[in-house]
Length: 197
Picture 1 (tube, rainbow, N blue to C red):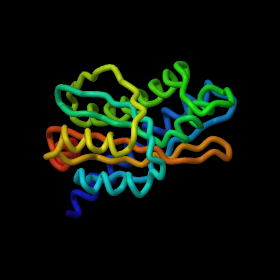
Picture 2: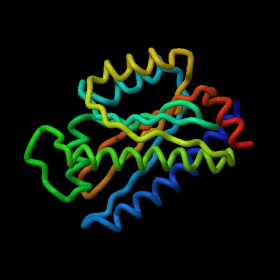
Picture 3: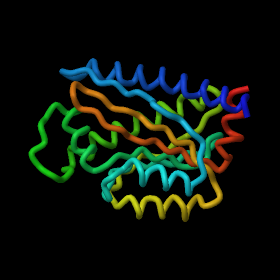
Picture 4: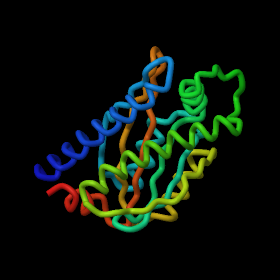
């Protein structure tokens, strides 16, 4: 158990460094710098994932970037945040104040790029640890109820566990949490054990 905790701490440190670098690259393109802090990383069962998201995402409607992976990391990744936070994030990244309550096409493209970056950062760390490739599909944005997303994950991956990262976005006074979920055919427990020896 102690060894597993140390492995998770190592993975958390690597993800923190990778997201910090990603935030720095994004900040160079924006008038105000941003930070992406990986606050927490945990292995959890899908029922626990459902409980955690229900407790931390108060809105019923969420925006989700969903991407499939093959090869060494076979499974799916989900980067998600509340709909209100999705509007705030789009405004922060585009530098344009949003005066509407719906995501237009340009806003959706911005979210897709951000979600793709977050998922690729995570996959990049895991690929480097495993020293193996893992091709991924094109990311797709979904705006749906939290209940519908969780039902989809539970139905598709009912026997799997999840790697759940909580990421804090900050820009000036704007602060909110986003969540990254990785569900693999190989259990995250086995995966982390293999990746960090």
